[in-house]
Amino acid sequence: MAATRYILAIDQGTTSSRAILFDAALRVVASAQREFPQHFPASGWVEHEPEDLWESVLSTCREAMSKASVPASEIAAIGITNQRETTLVWDRTTGQAIHRAIVWQDRRTAAACAKLSEAGHDSLVSERTGLRIDPYFSGTKIAWLLDNVPGARKRAEAGELAFGTVDCFLLWRLTGGAVHATDATNAARTMLFDIRRGVWDAELLKLLDIPASLLPEVKDCAGLFGRTAPEHFGATIPVRGMAGDQQAATIGQACFTPGMVKSTYGTGCFALLNTGSEPVTSQNRLLSTIAYQFGGKRSYALEGSIFIAGAAVQWLRDGLGIIEKASETGPLAEAADPAQSVYLVPAFVGLGAPHWDAEARGAIFGLTRNSGPREFARAALESVCYQTLDLLEAMQADWPGAKQGGAVLRVDGGMVASDWTMQRLADILGLPVDRPEVLETTALGAAYLAGLDAGLLPEPERFADLWRLEHRFMPHMATTQRETLVKGWREAVRRTLTA
Image (cartoon, rainbow, N blue to C red; front, top):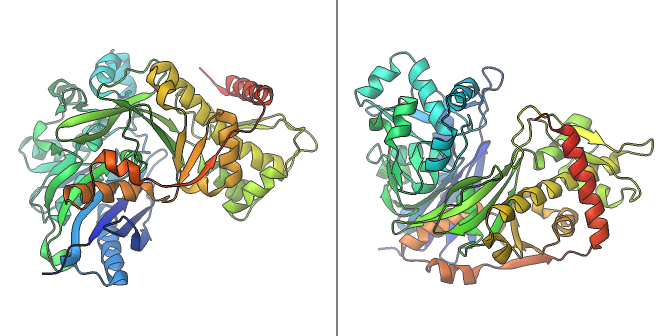
């Protein structure tokens, strides 16, 4: 029998699906990626075709295995990480979804969320789930599907339908419908899960009129979820790891010690601070969530979301046309006039944490006749740095332990390839910024979870010792300059907020 020397990570994202094959030392052996269409049936609505999600995952897994000439018999385990909150409901008999997936970005349930808040349910939701009442999360999306797809509610009450986030849907398909399960990190993003007790909350289900029969079993992040049907890859492969994308990145960054924080810079930015064995109730509009769960024991995190990070660079390229590719922004910013104080507040779709002002819109301050592409590029990149500072200061205000362990920020995602941006980030934060050797930390986290349960990889404490630094950016900016810049940013934000 062939040795099982590999781990297959499935990274199902918002715009594409990737499969990465790792060896037992977590080195990338092969990868494949496939984009899929986005659907916008109405203003503020975002949907995915479920079959696109499934087919892109299946094809990229097969492609990665083919590239490396690795058969299923040599793969010890599969790990899954996914876009969180995106909601699917499907038929338990056929496996067919009753509607397109409603994506985490979708805002169609804003009115329903407003009614829940007006009825005084904010404290209940916050206390049980650590979340805010918002269309972002899965709960009101499920209710919308039951109320708007003909016959759905009756079928759900009869036990004929199943709900899942993308990880759960993929697991169902991979196992040929044998397993309906999710992990604790994805369950924690539904607005239906009591993160302290680790169970689906009956009171919240009643509030949203969602039958409990729809819900999946909730498991640890590392464990045997099921085995793939042999027709998918030629032989069965155990699925042994699962976590939502931001939690998987936290694991991939080895942030297992309370006080450690990572920040992922993609289209938006998500910062997670490990708060240990007790959830922290935020007084600064952050979210409390499950970071990971091993052996039935949950570790928690404070999470801050920035809506616009890399999207600000995309705006420079597609909206203003002042760059052709993202890599041009760093050199442009470096050449900007230091005497100009241009600020971009990128509230193109409102401001996220810690402001949560959905009505705010983007604004630029400090323009002069000499302002041009260089200053715009610097302002766009700096806006990400300032927003990160806002998140970290909110975390420190919420939890004293943030100051103890928060002596360094671990970063990943597409934007961290820019040395200028990372140096500016260190200067604005007044903290060292660590960029790891492996930037694919989301897939790495999923692979680690699967490899841990398969016995190929060490326990978290020893895995943390394997984390490798590529470059540490140390702050060099004078304190007075930093304080002046931050003061200007705070004034720009104040003038942008509508609340």
